[in-house]
Amino acid sequence: MDVEHVIGLPHPRLRPFVTRYSGYRMHTEPGIHRGLPSRSLTLIVTMDGTVDLAQGRFATLCGGLHDEAVIITHDGFQHGVQCELTPLGMRAFFGMPAGELAATTVGLDTLDAPASELRERLQEATTWADRFARLDAVLGRLIKPVKQQVEVAWAWQRLASGAPVGEIAAEVGWSRQHLSARFAAEYGLTPKVMGRVMRFERANRMLRGEVRPTLTEVAVACGYTDQAHFNRDWRALCGGTPTEWIAAELPFVQGSEDGQGAR
Image (cartoon, rainbow, N blue to C red; front, side, top):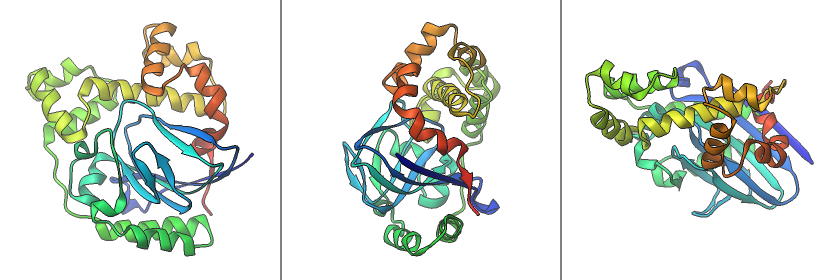
């Protein structure tokens, strides 16, 4: 197994729209990989091969927010760059709310983006730092003025801090039903489901750390009522228990959390 992950931060001007770049080059046994739910949309540009999903094969793609694992099949070689987009980034780069891509993946060219140029420029680069800089340049050209409904943006921030949905609805002066409808239109998931995804993401990041806590410690830290609740939620969002995911996936994804920085 030969796995390389390199993490890069986008240019400061892009950081409201892209949280980070993850360059990867992996030689492993053929198999499957689970793309896990998170608060980020996924933009991938491959440098070799394709990303193979149930929806098709993609050399470049953009995937929306989702509440279950996306199954990726591979032949043992994967090479490209993954960009973690914020929902605001969907509006800035492609002029649409994240909700329009909920639970689906499309080729980047369908979003009127320079997919071929991005791929060619990354293939020409010789270092990860250069590839990330080229992403900065192309994505920077795509930025458009963005505007979000204040109440919906506030609800996202409060969910990320762990606030309950009823409390958020009271803060913005909406009923829970109206908040849920407006939130889902913008992001593609309801506040309740998005809160579950954010909690799952926190747990997942804890397990990817250099010093791995016990599953009980993760469950307590992330607000699960008990270990059974933790396992049920994880199975629903991941397709397996935490123990099963650790055995099957952790060796391949741990580097994406702690990978070396681009130089």
